[in-house]
Length: 334
Image (cartoon, rainbow, N blue to C red):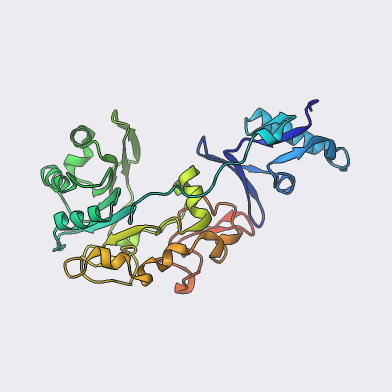
C-alpha cells in the first residue's frame, strides 16, 4: 500500500463490465485484461479513496489488487486525482460523408470501378476494402489499383484469392512498394497461415481459410477484437461496422454491407450522394452495441466489430448469428 490517498486508473485504461466478467480496455497499448468485477463500482469514478478501503471487510484484499494494477501499469497512486481528467470519448469531427467503403468484385462484375471511385471521392471517402472473388493476375491487379489514384482514398485493404504469384511474397512486396496507400493484403485459400510485416509498415496476411463470397463475412472472434481508441469511441454511440460505411456488392448493388439483402439500386443507376441522404440507408448507423440483444451484456461490446447482416432470427437488434460467445457463462461455444 502507499501513503498517498487515492488510486487512479490511467485515462486510457477503461473498465467494461459484462454479465459475468469485467475487462479493462487499455486503449494505448491496444489490449484488454480481465479484472475482478468487485473493483468496477469502486472504479466508476476512475479513482478510489484509499482510506475508504479501511471501512471494508475486504479492504486488505482490494489493496493487494490495486498494487497489482499499479505493477501492471494500469493505474497509479496519487494525492491529487483531480489533476488527471478522464479521456474524452466524444467522436472527432470530420467532414467525411462516408468514411470507408467495401467493394466486391468477381468474374461477372459489370460495374466500372473508376466511376465508383469518382463518386466515393465526392463523399470524401478515406478508406476502401477491395475484396476479390476471382483469379486475378498481379499485372491486372496493379492496373486495377490505378483507379484509386487522384482520389480521396488514403488507405486500401485488399482481400485476394491465392495463386502462384500471390504466394510469392516478393511479388506482393512490389505491390506495397508501388502503392503506399495499401495497408493490408489478405491472401485467402493459401497453403500457410502467416503474418508478414512489410517494410512500408503494412501487413501481408496469408490465411488457409477459403473465402467463397460475401457470405464468409460476419464472423465474431477474439482475433477480430480491436481495443483501440477510435473503435472504443465509435462503439459508444454508433454501429462500429456500418457507421459512415457504403458498399458495392459484386453485382453492382449499393448497400450498407455486401452481405445485407437491402439494396438501394445499381451503382450505375443511382447517385451515391442520393443514397447516403436516404434515411433508410443511415438508419443502421445508430445501432450500437448497447442496443443489441446479448451484446449489451457482454464485456467485449466496445472492442468487438458488430455484424447486422447475419443476426439471430434475422432481427434488427438480434445478436450476431456467427458469435459463439455467451457473456452469461463467459464461455465460447464450439
